[in-house]
Length: 373
Image 1 (cartoon, rainbow, N blue to C red):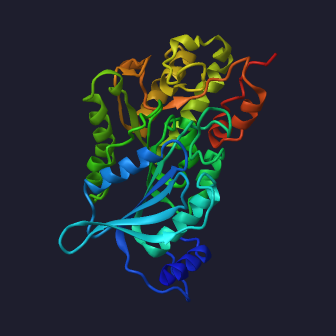
Image 2 (tube, rainbow, N blue to C red; image 1 turned 60 degrees about the horizontal axis):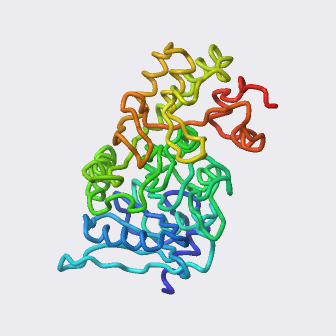
Image 3 (cartoon, helix red, strand yellow; image 1 turned 135 degrees about the vertical axis):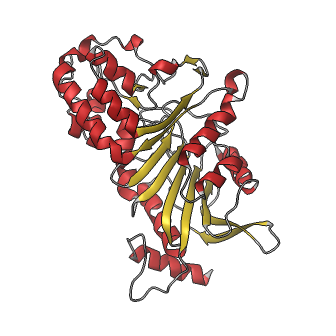
């Protein structure tokens, strides 16, 4: 443990992906380091333990690094490394025990990432964010939000700023994170985003199946998403519930440009869009998540060919079951991403919060918003 404490101090000093300095010892660099960041200091603790067991039953890399940050209820967070010993048996090593902290704080995420990258340097980095989630919404605006830990929730803007280097991918095993607002906020720090515009069942991703694709060279991220979809699409009843997409972030600037053109020409129609005609992904009265592509099509009266072409280049994989629980999902209206639709009755505080996102600023998304009463 003394060795890992020294590494931890070095990690706090280093801010680069390749933590090399005059005072830092050299560590063997691998091709890939993947961190599964599990914020389960909430009602998902048992699900986290089940998913960890699922990982152990699947592909465990021998030449790369599979790390799991685990924060369960009534426990202190630890960093685990999964690997195989000489006989091929799966080994779970506790490589660091963190002091008590709130895992839904972006500073905690940043610290864990720096420790991981210092102790396990690699050419490629992947991040799985596992917890509750409610997309772009601010803290306290829903019954659950990403990284829920004792009432604390992680702001998406803070999450993006917490990434200490560019990630090859971020996978959200959390509800409602598949929004254009989230992907666009991460685009300057992440190559690909894997997420669901609707909720995710508490059983989460089939980890015994997806790691083999993540640790291939090159990474097979579309296969990861397909494994998730096939897993749930093969279920019956309410368990047959899944929406998923893979977004190529380098294409999002073009999507923003085409969206800005649509809003400039048709923004005056926002107040007339019938939201009942737009595919929804929310349940109950939490009406902040509608299909992005479907909304733009309704707003422009179908005059959105260039926009749809740009969106198709960005969303490199998408799939949905016919229903997510009680929500009917039309395959033809499913674009793979959700969005917020401003309305005359929108909460002023919420609109102000939304206006701070890169997506809102770069597209003028709220510029034509109807006046509020």
